[in-house]
Every structure is written in C-alpha cells, then in structure tokens.
Image 1 (tube, rainbow, N blue to C red):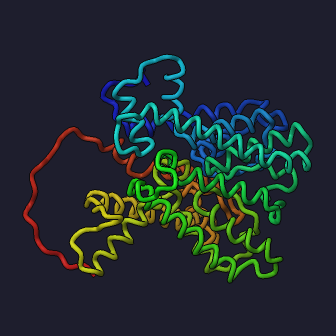
Image 2 (image 1 turned 45 degrees about the vertical axis):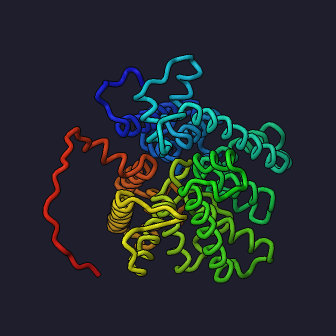
Image 3 (image 1 turned 180 degrees about the vertical axis):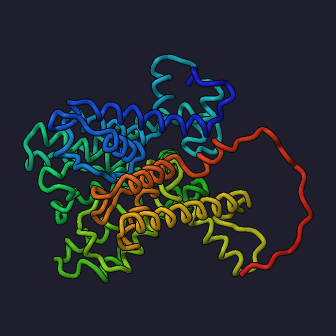
Length: 442
C-alpha cells in the first residue's frame, strides 16, 4: 500500500484493493491451462467467476469441478481466501511477514476493513485472525477428509476437503461436487451428518465476525463481559438460524426421514445467510420459504466477518429502535448501553441502499430475461448478499444480467457505504445545524 497516493482514503484503498484482486484473478483464469479443455476462459466467464470468488459469493456460470483445471480451481480458492479475509488483511499480513513497518494509514485502513472499534492493537488482532483462520480451516479439512477420500480417492479427497473447508469458512459457496453432477452443490451429501455439521460450523464461525472471536478468546464463557456488539451478533445470529429452520422443517422437506429433514432444515437456514451451499433442491421449496430465504440473504452475516449482506447488527439496531419507539423511549438501548444515533442513521442508509439495488436489479433482469420476478429477485438478493444460492438461472443469463450481478456482488462484499464514502469523501467539516421542524411519519 506504500505506492498509493498519500491523499487516498481508507475506503478507496478497500474499493481499489478488491477491484485489483478481481482483475488479476480474471487474467489468471483466462490462461489456457486454467480450464480443463486447455483453451482458457473467455473474459466474460473469467471476470464473473473472479468477482464471485473474490466477493465470496458462489454464483457461477461454469461448473467449478468440470470446467476449471486444477490450476483454475487453485486460483479460485486463493481468491476466495483473499476475499474472505479481506484484501487489506492479506496485504497487512504480507507486509508484517516481510518485516515492513505498518504505518498509521495502513492501521486506519485495517480498522475500517475489519470493523474494529479502535486502531490500537490492530496488527496484533490481524495476526490473531490469520492464525485462527488457518487453524479452523485445517480442522474443518481434517474432519471432512475421510469422507471425501472414501468417495474420490486420497489425492482428490484431500484437495476436496481443503477446498470445501476454505469455501465454507469464507462463506463463499463454491464447491467441486460437479464431479458427481453439474451444479449440484452438496445435495449428494444431504443425509451425511459429518459433512452437514462441519460445513454449518465453518459457515457460522466465519460469519460471526473477528471481534466476536476475540471476545470468546479473552472472556471465554463469561458472556456478561462481552462487547455489546458481540452479544448482539450472537443473539441475532441464533434467532436467524433457529426460527427459519423451524419454518423450513414444518413446511418443507416433509417427505424425508426425520434425521435428513432436521439436517436439511438447519443447513438451509445456516447457508442462506451468505454461504451459498445447498443440500436440497431449492426449486422445490414453497414460495413462502423462498421469500424467507430472500430476506435472510439480504441480512447476511456480521460485521468484520467473512460474510456479506446488510449484516445482523443492522437488522438488530432497526428492531431495537422500533421497540424503543413503541415503548416511547427517547434512546435505543441494549445490554445496559445506549446505541448512538449515528449508528441508526447508518443502518437506515444501508437497508435503503441494499433493498433499492436488490429490487432494481431484479426488475431489470426480469424485463431483460423474461423470467418470473421472484426467481430474479432471488438471484439479485443472492448476489448483493454475497450468498451464491440460485434457482438455476445463473449460467443462462445474458450479458446485461451478468453485469448487474457482478455489480451487486462487488457492492455486497466491499460494502455500500464504503463504496459511497470512497467516491464522496470530503475534508470539509460543517458543524452548522439548520433549524429543526417537526415532521410526522407513520
């Protein structure tokens, strides 16, 4: 980051960093030996795949297992790791490893990239994140390896275990199950408890956020000592897993054995918030639960995590604010703390932006492709939430629709506010305040 202009902002570094990683990945995927047929991918396919991998989404236009060579799959996995950890996190790690001093600008950028509350200790936190990530991904691969080795043989089984562990932890949703059936995701393992539970655990751990990890490390089971954000993340995440799982169990998967039905319900509830794997045929789910999945995809994971979406804390702040209004409270409170008005303004801006882009993208794709509105909204929610789930239309979409999805995936991973701040940052500070006038809403 030393080569960047001095006046560049943290938001601009994050935006440009992701864009640079995507372009580099696309160029690598266009090489002849990146595809199984040795011809190389077109720029359109390479750019879409690179965006989806770097933005840890999982939407694909070519089956990962059958279209890409081992080299191509390795490039995709590296992009997933970079996208999940964050371009800035990886850059800082490389700088530290090479012995370079991390300046104030880099620390500020790192703070913004992982949503850290303060700049102090940011380099140490980065080291903790990298080491913990390596341990968790290695454990996930070790647990799944016996299943994949039995199914695919030793070398391929090890590779599949590593690939799916990293993809699940980074909430990417890329899979290699096309070796069984193209675009099948994890449906082959729908009744395998080991694969289901391991993938779900990796998704949850990757999606709760690095600061929650730090609280767990420091405070262990003493939940009362956790930051307010950690408490809010854990409670909201638990609710968003349990309630949808109950809804899926009651109204879908009724023809399955009980164990498979429980696993399927839990898996779909967990994976819908930015992970992108699926063990069941999503086209067979009823329209009510399809709508529930759209909402879950838009919400996404938590701040400072490998996941995308509007974030669990955004939803929680809006709900808590509504409750405070209903109770005629002047301030929004949680866990003995008040939530700043600026946080509420940010939450409202984020929701407005995500919902507007999701709806606009869905309408354009519907008109362009002549497809049902619900199917297209599912696709755009999946893109902007960096989820990767699809009702099967991604590979057949035209250029305009693909460009829309690329834009939404990029916005979803970089962050809408980060992108806007990078474009509209100003050094002018206006402390003046206009006269207030009462406005009636509702």
